[in-house]
Every structure is written in C-alpha cells, then in structure tokens.
Amino acid sequence: MHYLLVFIGVITYLGTKLYDDIKTEVKSNPKGDENKQYMANVGTTIQKRYAIASTSLALVTLGSLFFPVLIFISVAGIIYTTIPIWKNAIHGLKKPQFDMAVFDSLLFLLLLITRHYFILALLNWIYYLSKRFAYQVKYIEQIIRATQIYKKMPKVVWLLKDGVEIEVPCEELNIGDTIVINANEVIPVDGVIINGTSLIYQHIFTSELQYLQKNVGDQVFAATIVLSDRIYIRVGKSSSETLLVQK
Image (tube, rainbow, N blue to C red; front, side, top):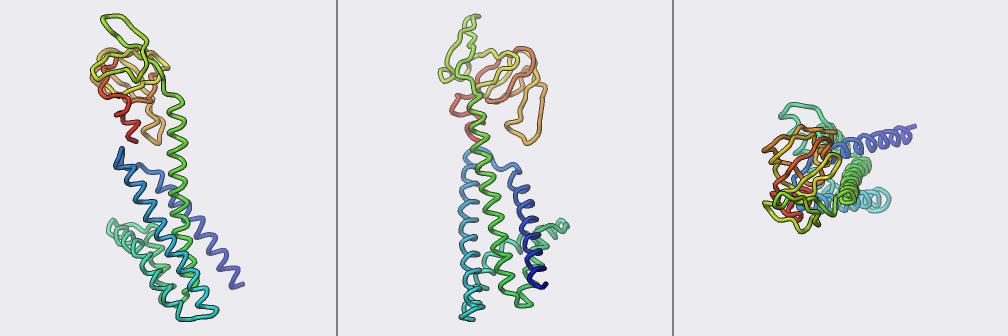
C-alpha cells in the first residue's frame, strides 16, 4: 500500500508539473535575436540541470542499495538543482501567491528534513524532466508554426509604380515602395498603410484570434492577412528584416 501511494503521488506530481510547465512555456518570449538567444539559453540550462538531476537519482539509488556515501553526493546535486525552485518560491511569496514553485519548495524541504532522499531525487528528476519536455514542446511548436506561415507567404506582390500596378517578386521590393494588398491576401513585408482601411488578422503574433481595424498611418506586419477591402502599404522593411523573420 505504501508503494502504491508513492506511485500515485509521483504520477500526480508529474501530471501537474507537465501541465504547469507547458502552460508557462507557451507564454510570449522575447522577440527577434533576443528570442533565439533566450531559447538557446533556456535549453542549455534545462539540459544541464536535467543531467545533474538524473545523476543524482542514479547515485541515491546506488547509495541506498550498495554504497551509502553516494547518497550525500546525490543530495549535493539535488540542492544545487533546486536553487532555482527556492528563488521562484520566494518570488511567488512576495506577490503574494501560492503557486507550484512554493509547493515544490515546501515538498522538497520536507523530504530533505525527513531524509526521504530517494523520493526527493525522484521528484527532482521529474521536475526537470517536465521542464525538458515543455521546452521541447515549445521548440517543436515554433518550427511547425514557422513552416505553416512560410507556406502561406506570397511569392509576388502588386507594386504601385507611376500609377500602374506591376506584379513583382517580393524579394525585389525596396524600402519606400508602395504595394497594393487586396482582401484575403497575405501582407509580405512590414510597412505602414498610406491609403485604405481594413481588418487585419494577426494571429501569428498572438496566442489569440485577433481581428484589428487598421487605418492610414497604422503599422502592419508580414504574414498577417487583409480580411476586407484594399489597402496601400509603404514598405518599411525588406523581407529579410521583418518582424516575422525576427520571431
């Protein structure tokens, strides 16, 4: 019965952590190069702590079965990897609010004091396993999202030159050019509306369905969709410098 309760507790904790971490990871991150650096730093940190947590779990297992001294080495690794948990807990209490970080810190402290080292190492490993999984979900989501977006990006656009609309490849556009976008067409570059009014679908840059009214003087972005009417846009950035590319 004791082992069954432990198993149920571990599974419950894993499920709760996965839900909480995935929910946290899908929040907006910094844009552009900052976002790429942010994702790289997060991935490296999580992988490092996951490796330490895995080693600690292996050491405490061997220590419990054969060499007790290994348990103390394992505890050192656990304490190192739980430092961010204590920091998050302190930050949460300052708000104040009782979130998963506070729960984790109290649970880990209780297990440490009562010398349940194996359960502590196991939960610490699960903690970083869920972090690692949530990061991978976020990374895969970004790849899928980028693939879907680029499939929809137009290859050509109508350029207004000397009062005449000319179809040209998007990569030939220059800053200051005026392009014409009709209803249900995708905007290929960042720019500013100089004539016309339209509803613009900007789901790519948000986690919600957003239909925004855009008027003369408003900024619009590549990969967003014109839902109504026709608008004239002055190109503000080349196709390689758009907010879409920076994401």
